[in-house]
Image 1: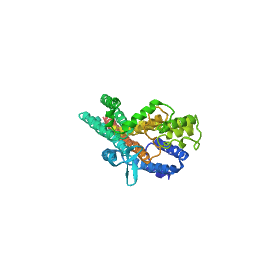
Image 2: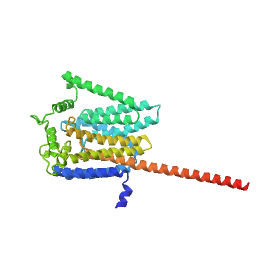
Image 3: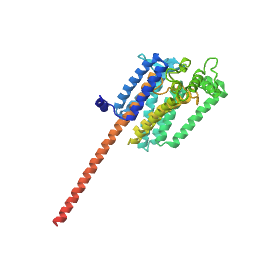
Image 4: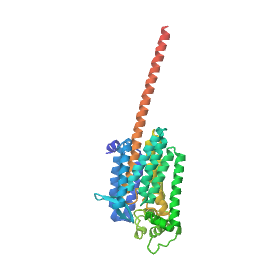
Length: 403
């Protein structure tokens, strides 16, 4: 069995271990807070692990062509969701195909990150068309984030931030900062206009009202759940964190799940801190930071731009999403609806995040093999040069002796 695992499962060992720890931690916590959905959640994690293994076998070089297909199909599905999507939590961001329910935005995130890495790599290799590749990528990103923005501001903003981060890593410092400043100014102007002129808000998507109310609730910062229980999650989360203390009340003894409807999804981090305390909360943070650290090591070993940017982009998406989720739970930022990767309940999120890890492992696997092959070729060339030099020296010595 061990030989089979060594033969088929390769890549970065630390990342496999991190996933295993998330698997155990998430399973225990889900059993603790909801027995009904725990088995289903574990099955999703097992399926995600198999997806991760399959993704890490595929050479990362194949991702270039596949990413454009994924991105284009996600556009179609995002548009379709606006007209005939499933409405969950007052948003039409879900669709159901062959009995499978998922969010097209998850596939859009995956496709755009790889497409961005491809264009950044092309721009680095071709100085003549570098500007063209940059603006094409900005246009593609604007379309993708715009389609997501209609029903999911936080995901659109997060994805745009990751793309800008990747562009900065690619060397587009000034252009990226100026473009980001322009977009932030534009978005800020729209918000201010909607506040100053209420009629402007009527032509904006309905989610603008939701975003505005969430910001108002965050600014209020009170422990009043409101007449319609609109602040129930935030207030319950704060109480759960306060109750957890340093070491928590132990799994199974949490009270948050009895009143908080997002205890297994967006606010599961509050349940974790309640039952495992500050210790468990910090452990989760360390695991995500370790994942980002290993991604940096893998990227540093890559000898070309594309795989390095892919790894850093995917790892940044996972860790930033986790950071946003935890900041929401502790009350540092307004509610966004971002799940905690690997831990929150939800098949789409688990599967896509496991694909992220599988692709990172593919880069770790095949880039290390390429480096080993290059080192072997370099070693053989050096060895042949040494032998050639030894032969020449030997002939010169023989000639001198003969003379």
